[in-house]
Image 1 (cartoon, one colour):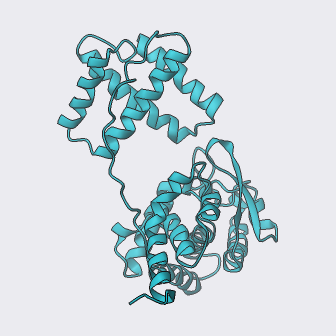
Image 2 (image 1 turned 90 degrees about the vertical axis):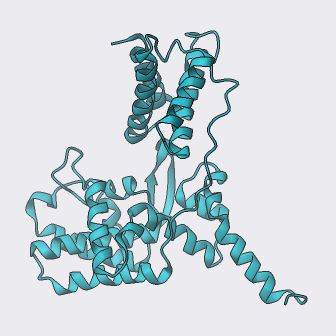
Image 3 (image 1 turned 135 degrees about the vertical axis):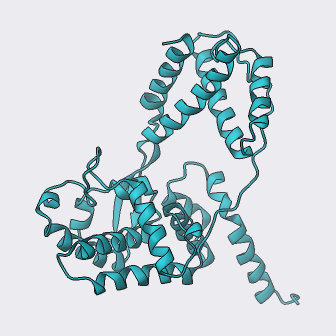
Length: 309
């Protein structure tokens, strides 16, 4: 393993042990740092030994390779954190990224489904359950997808949190449950009555399949982790969208999480409450939804101020 490779492994170990970074986060850091190291290796150097001028050249190279501004910003952030780690550990006496201007990332508004579109998705999923025979493979797939959607829209979970829920969540008759999110931080999320009914239907269907009946996961599957891969859920959701007459390009599990947050704000929820429900450690992350609040406040003034037009 190269010198930079050893440093990258040490950095990733620190991120996992001290900051509780998830496997997905660690994989993303690894790809970005190894991509940067490959750039320096091509010139006979290494990322760990890079100079400020070398870092600037690497950033310019990303532009020439036509990476999106958001991708450049993410990669630069990974490299910045890597060098902060090397400096803190005394491996380097300087931080070559200290005076860099990171590529500016545009503030992209989240894709959002309307309340009517979400209702069409949920109604279509429920109809497909009712159209299938109990115990059939069609009923199994339809009930699982319907329950996934009801849970996601009721709770705003990240898709990685949703597919990895323990079966005990469905076996308790409670209006809320605890989930561990990024950094192993625990938060409380709500359960709607409809989501609870859907989970009860899923438990009945799941029990018909003996190979899955004893699994500790709510959505068991023959995968390495033992639960449904998020890519399978995303694929099934896009197919359902098409059947519901909604563009599959508009839908993903993450878009439904955005819909959960946006629809709460549109209907009067407080931004801080939404922050807690989403599991955002920083309110600035939740502020991508301020466009929803801005419209609500404009309407409030327009409809209630005595001097409004």
